[in-house]
Image 1: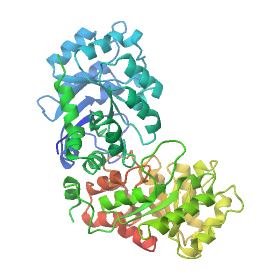
Image 2: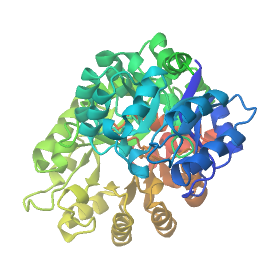
Image 3: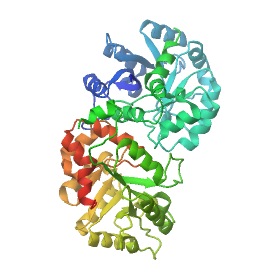
Length: 248
Length: 259
């Protein structure tokens, strides 16, 4: 089975605990050990420091390296603080960046159409998937509002814990553009349950490296009580299809 | 046994004794869970090659201590040799007495303390003393929910005052309390850590083994909150020797659970 990780952070982050992977070489060693072929990667500086600088660092860190699929972090244009939508799309095309990650809570902005409508329209038009962690959203209602405000954008929401099913399953039922990153979705039998209710197409394998466990994430898919076809979709198929549809 | 190949080949952990020291059965008020009855858990254990698990009944940790412990007893009876029980005391119900669960072999192997959801009761509170005295007299393991530094310190205090029981610091070894858990493991022979935490990165179990020694680390999954696959996979792919993995997976537990 081929694994492609949909959530990997490169670069030195603020908080580093002893024995956690930090360098690109250490992340690659873990990917090799867990037989992860490639990873969608953004840069720590783009999250924690300066978004534009972090996106440029990503280009340097992944230059000539086919193991990483480039992902940029985006901000609203907001009076010129960040690239315009047109500049962003041009930059993505020129630098083979195929997806966007957003941190609305960390970076402090609204997801509502009055603030992000033009940006999300472009994501929909160019079929660019948008990634977030669940803790970047204020609530399950905020998630539902985003998914219904932008029904043509594919969202991948990751770091969903074992305690969220009561909140998130009704949203999965109503919003076909909602996909779950599997990395921290560790509830007993959770992968099987989600396949039964919503189909394997709604799950995207991710690890959350370097602070998530790639070994645990891979094992949860390898040993899930689902068919090999479903495992293949989750491990790499769904993400590859989504990225292949991007039009830049 | 090449544990990595088990994951790559999607094969159960057969030929090695695997015992999960940290399990839960039953409904959880705060969230919808996956399958959480004993039979469903044994189904997953069979698929993964897990020999046994020691569980507490989740609603029994809250108000219904007797009903909860009786449910654990019934599950142990239905699934003998696979599911073992932790008896859970309630610090607010003065009549709570765990002795009957240990007067004959009903499958109970230890005591579970979960003070943070019992009104933030300190883990070393005198209202738990009867349970500690029982565990000390019978040389039982006591599993503490302990992922905050003060929770770990209180569990260590119990270990110091009751030297014949064995304290298991649930979760504690691998979260923000891990330094305190390491200190407790080093200071007291009767303190151990389990591996039941979802968010710990790769390398954390290796870190713990390096700090406290492999004999002090026990495989725990937190099933049915978590899938036991999660920590099994993390252990299987860890940078540890197969001998160390076998100790963590079950050989260490065998000694302190009288299996």
